[in-house]
Amino acid sequence: MALTETLKQHLNDVYNKCIHCGLCLPTCPTYNLNYREESSPRGRIRLVNSVQNDQLPLSDIFVDEMYFCLDCQACETACPAGVHFGELVEEARNQIAEEHREPFGLRFLKKIFLQNVLSSPGRIKSAARLMRFYQRCGLNDAVEQSGILKIFSNQLCEKHKLLPTINDKFFDEEVAEVISPNGEVRGRVAFLSGCIMNVAFADIHHDAVDVLTANGFEVVIPKKQVCCGSLHAHNGEIEAAKNLARKNIEVFERFQFDALITDSAGCGAFMKEYSRVFADDELYASRAASLSAKVKDISEFLMEIELTKKPGTMNIKVTYHEACHLVHTQKISQQPRQLIQSIPGIEFAELPEATWCCGSAGIYNVVRYDDSMKILDRKMNNLASTRADIVVTANPGCHLQLQYGIRKYRLNMEVVHPVSLLARSYRS
Ligand code: SF4
Ligand code: SF4
Image (cartoon, rainbow, N blue to C red; front, side, top):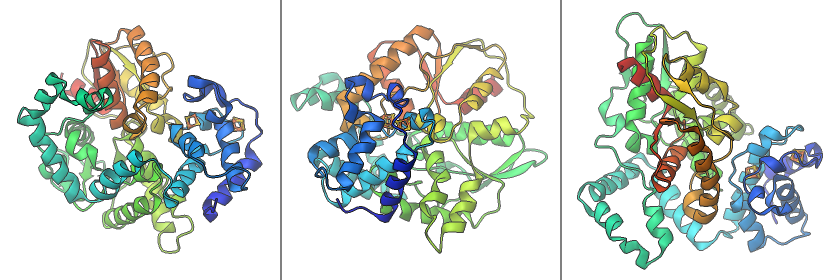
């Protein structure tokens, strides 16, 4: 297996660091599905090394194992030796893509969705407008109610239900490039509108801007920003991810701001990694490092500043699901809980196994639906046990997966972003 220099370096780091202790195994959702060593973090590290050293071929089994992994990075949190497993699996996927060894379905999805649609803001909006028409004209309901997709497969019928509902208006088309607060300005922040969030979660973005301005921050939303590239990077499309990241670096550095706020865990995690991704790039290394240093998840930012606007009372029971890219990648765990519990009247119920992946994992629930549903089962049983009215989570993928699970399990629960909960409390 011909490896990139970066992967070789990472493999060396992993081997030097991994002490084969196995502490990561109980935290790995895929190992806990089949209890096979090769589906564990430790086993996968060994697999990649064996393929690198030509002791094993780059076989379909190897490819399957690299994509069975959720890239949830729970193993990184558990690892006492500081092994950065996520970087390893992403590099291995990149290598698999370069050698065109992905299964046909995955390659097709990546070609259409990652390489064509998500790589261009114009194409994202065109695709979203088409989908919005499909959802509003009654065709979407007719397809769901008739179950016509079952003719092709039951899975296709279920995957159709995972589609996000497109907003009536896209976020970036409704807001000015600079939004000032009423009254005294405490600081200036930039804001990532992103790709899917911009067209399907505009309400969360509006809540974020409302909360930031209500607390005295001017918000800059550059019109020319693009998708952060995280889905590309996690699925073996590192060059496409870097192209998007370069564009964002160039766009954001035209503005002055104290912090770059994201309300999507996956986007924030990858933008914090721009510095690592461009570490060897003469032209972009320092520019990427300076942007990454300013990236803050919105809960992280709000818990660092003093909230000058105090939350209103909400008499509801709330629980919290930790998005992998928030807890395991960004190590942000307490701040969203603090934010929720800062709202008077809320009864907070701790979710058992809150840090266990929900099975969404980017496009995992589409390309590995059956495995994703086994992981979702565990999450939904835990969610049901809380009897909460609302489950709070901070990533669009988790949001859609939990909404799907709630419908499937007929729970009476709503999925809400932490900043939307705070915005609601302001309105209450
Ligand atoms: S916890 Fe870390 S050191 Fe131990 S086996 Fe897993 S990856 Fe290796
Ligand atoms: S990233 Fe997640 S699924 Fe993959 S090996 Fe680590 S814990 Fe297991």
